Length: 261
Image 1: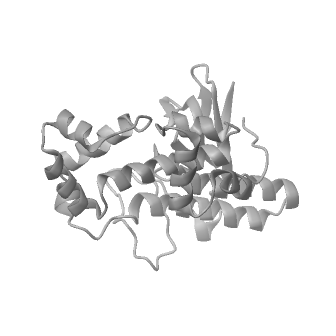
Image 2: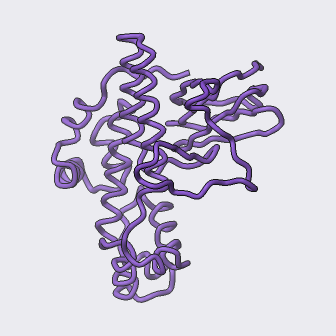
């Protein structure tokens, strides 16, 4: 199916992979990634997609808030000053904190069905796009950037990302990277302001939050899939980091049954 796209379209994939093209550019948008399609273009699927995603169109023809598409030759200075009203987003990329974006998109979905109010929808979608901009550009640590920009720091993050569903130990990371465990522990904390163990638990819980708000997977299965030894261990860790039990968090933020296209 092919159509002419006359608006901007924001797509956030929460499960599977979406194979979509705009004119002659083909994208494979995986779980946890987003795409902004820009007008005017021919939009079509180029491969079978088994996926779930949130999507919303937004206008481009209001002079006051006219979105601009930049090329590599005229990229703006980012991040913008904190008092700026502008938002800058790459056309596609990963969503660092998926659960925060899901909550806003669920609210947009629920309020649209409930009120059908264009102003309310515009505010919530703007909040979602602003949240994504903030995640990408405004979450830099005040710690020493020399550490965060180093190859070793990136390798540690990559290892954790690859093995996030396992019971990761600092000694495993050290052995894989060929460093002393004490050395990488000290190195990572200087760069991030937290221990490796704290970072791993935080990432696991962030993934759990997204699954709790955007799926019906049993809580115990979510915990086991993230490398916790049992449901109790997962629940205790979740409560310690969020102040809520997994079931309470799900009841609070799972606003309504998801509708996906």
